Image 1 (cartoon, helix red, strand yellow):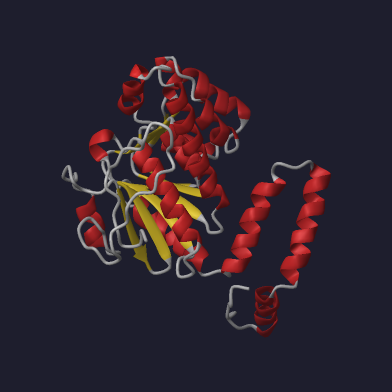
Image 2 (image 1 turned 120 degrees about the horizontal axis):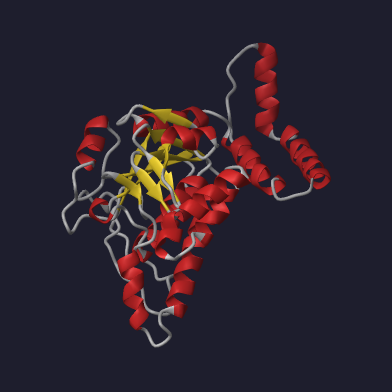
Length: 312
C-alpha cells in the first residue's frame, strides 16, 4: 500500500509500462513526510539520490502527493507516471481520504516528460516508436485517472508547469498557484507539438488562448492562468500548498457521496449535446434526491442544524 510509503525510481521493461512497483510495508519511515508545516518545509530540501520520487502524507481527510524529483524539474518519468497512477488507484478506495492535493518540491512543479529518458530509446530497432506509444498511453491513462477519481483533486503549483506538467495541472479539478508560478506548452519550440497536453488544456481554457499557448510556447504568469481559467486562485509565493490543502479540506467536509456524483456528472455532461446533458443531469439529480445524504442535508437545512453525513 502506498499510504505512508515511498516509491523508488525504477525503470519499466521495453514492452510494458504497467509493471507494478514494490511497495514497502506500511509505516516505513524514510522519505515519508508527515502532515505538519515543519515537515512540509523540510520536504522542500533537495532529496538525496536514494530519496523516493513520490511522497505521500495524509492531513486530516486530505491526501497529499508530492512530486520529488527537483533536480530533474519533477519531469514525468515512466516511474513517476506509474507511481502517480498507482497512488490514484489506491486513494480511490480509501474511505478515510476525501480529497487529494498534488504538489511538488523544488523550483518547478513539473517540466513535463523526461526528454533524456525518451531520447535514450531512439536507439531501439524501431527508433523508439513502441516505447513512445506506450509512454504516451500510460501518461494519458494517469491523467484520466485524476478526472475519474471519485474525490476532488487540487493542484498546488509553486513553480513552472510546462508541457505534460501543465497538462497535469489542467487535469486536476481545481488548482491553486503561487504568484511565482508560470505555465506553458512549449513543445513547438523543440519540434514536438504538445498534442496530449492540448487535450487537457483545451478543456480548461477558451480555444483562442489554448491555441496561443500551443502555437507560441510562451510562458504565461499565474495571474494570466487564473484569468483564462487554467487555475482557480493565485496566492503569495510559499503559501500555495497550505491554500490548496485548505481548499481541499473545505470540500472534504461535504458528503463524499454527493461529491462523487457531482464530479462524475460534471465531466460526463460536458461531452454531451445540450439536450442530452440536461436529460442526463435530470436523471442524476433525481437519483441524488433519493440518496440518504440528500434527505439528511435538506432536513438539516429546514431544521437549521448541521447535517450528519453517512456518505450514501
